[in-house]
Length: 128
Image (cartoon, rainbow, N blue to C red; front, side, top):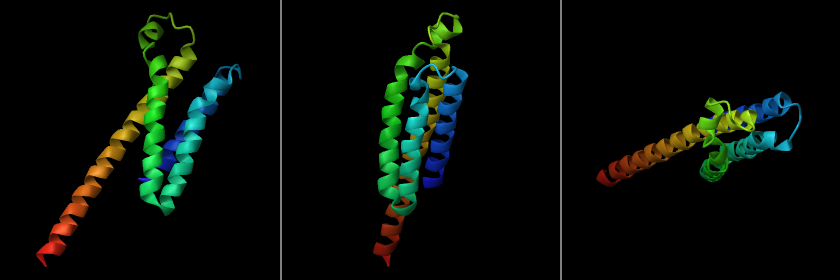
C-alpha cells in the first residue's frame, strides 16, 4: 500500500501542476490537487518505514480531499451543459475525486485483507 500511496501522490501533484499551467497560472487553487498529492506522497514515504501510521494518515487526507472536491464534482451537470463557471476546476476536481475514491476503496480492501490474514495467523498459532 505505501507504493500505491506514493504513486497516487505523484499523480495528484502532476494533475495539480497541469491544471495550474492549463489555466494560465490564473489561480493558486488549481494547485490544490498538487498540495493533496504532496501530503499523500509524504504519507507514503512515512508508510515505507511505518506502514500503519503512514497509510492511516494518507487515508484521512484522502477522505478530506473527497469532501473538499465534492462541491465542484456536484457541478458536473453544469459542465456537461456547458454552463460551468470554471470548467477546468470542475474537471480537475472530478479527476481528483475519482482518484481519491479509488484510493480509499483500495485502502479499505487492504485493511480487510490484513485483518483476515492476521485472524488466520492467530487461529493457526492457537491451534498449534
